[in-house]
Image 1 (tube, rainbow, N blue to C red):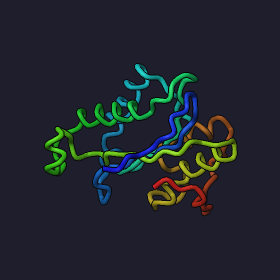
Image 2: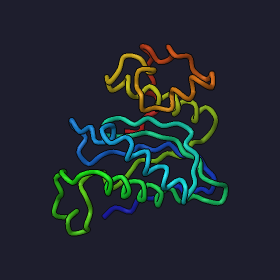
Image 3: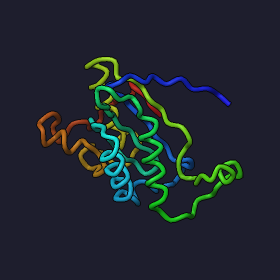
Length: 176
């Protein structure tokens, strides 16, 4: 089994991509958005983190987190979020023999993708990527139309205009 090396830096900011095990035609996240929100909230209460930006798509999500200054344990947080969400939704997914052996459900990919945000430019590029993602995947024509995104908060704060992201491309930063 591969040994993955992750950058655990106390107080750092990370970009994450987290996928469902089966992505094709699988709207589990958006169909169960309240359960997902509840999982995030519950974990955040016990193990705080700041969500800088987020987008929830039907079968994957992207977000940027900043952890407290002496904390670098994002892996446990993701494990808790995935587990809590999995316990809240009905069991109707296919489960492989290896997952059954480990008493796992077949909802999430076992791993996730993370990237340490290096500087202000990197931070802003990833926020743009997150907010443009529903347009990139053809779910909406305009960024403002996607309801499961922090884009709306950014518009309220005056950081983006409602028409931002129409016809633009933000493929210079990938996480999928």
